[in-house]
Length: 197
Length: 197
DNA sequence: GTCGAATTGGACCGCCGGTCCATTTTAGCC
DNA sequence: GGCTAAAATGGACCGGCGGTCCAATTCGAC
Picture 1 (cartoon, chains in turn cyan, brown, purple, yellow):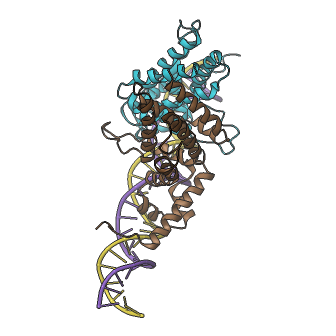
Picture 2 (cartoon, protein in one colour; picture 1 turned 90 degrees about the vertical axis):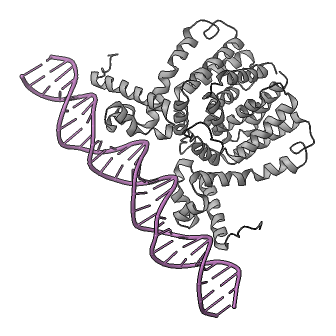
Picture 3 (cartoon, protein in one colour; picture 1 turned 120 degrees about the horizontal axis):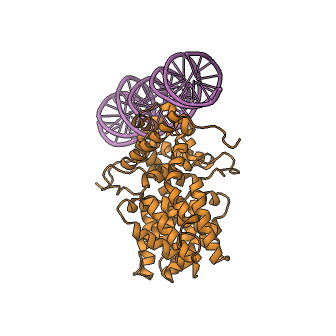
């Protein structure tokens, strides 16, 4: 009952090949040069297979991102402090901002590719709820920690602003030059500054 | 000598028509649905004309943005305080953040369209200096004000972070719902918090 | 070994940004 | 007013994109 349907062995093999090819290409080329056709070719499969597996370009990028963010997610929910539960909110926040910056720094091409597709606004502004699960988790964690420490602040919006930095072109460019520490420090400064305002 | 060459009357008329058509379409549809062909049709000119005038999609968006940001630029350099010169840096910063949020709120579609094209990274990471003149001005103004008040901070990076909020999908979505004041307040909070850290 | 279901891959589609160039329009000059 | 060189025009055209389709293949439960 719970086991709805097993994925066939060849399908699983191709899924891995595609994800790895996409990862490799995104690390080497800017995202607009990494077409679905190139990914398929690099993975040694047909274009149809890629779309059959992942539905769309955005779907592929989404799944790739979930994979890359998986370790951080576990460290936050189950790992040791200060990232995991147990430390003071402000310390967890600092640690988390550092960790997020590091993940993003190691995957800048992917982030850019995600951002390009994510902007697609829906006709009615009602839904658009199909937000990216990774973003939702990151945002929920940050805003939760802020709210815990300072219930009087607009935690949700502050969290969006802090995360917004990671989508800014100039900042991503800096990240590409190994300036991760510099960014993490400024983010921490802003966060702690707001908490003490 | 200084007068290199006058723009022909029909050319000027078409330039206006194109800019206005693009503006109108971007206000109504998400940017990925506003193709150059549609803009040309809406302006009543041929596609070739649009490209002859503006060179590329990015070029059109750039010129549109410069136009929309023109009033703010003048208010900052020549207008009365607190936006213009004369007030204390921290007050000018608050006023400027408010004003920028308002401009962006009135042009969210345009901003998104700009962002999509702006991500195009160059092969060598060397140049990419062809940054958007509006962004350069906004960033220079903010970081200048921060540096004036607190020379010990990483003013350039802080300015990038504050501006980065305006490119964040979720935040732009909020702006579209008239939450401009809420955003402006949080930005001010972060800025003043950092200045007093 | 059989057979239905899942998977596969590449031809195909509509559309995009951008180029090209034969034709038309403009405006300075007599 | 006509003349003419230069500027402007617009639509056919190009390569490539994301995405669809479906006949042929492959898998694995029995």
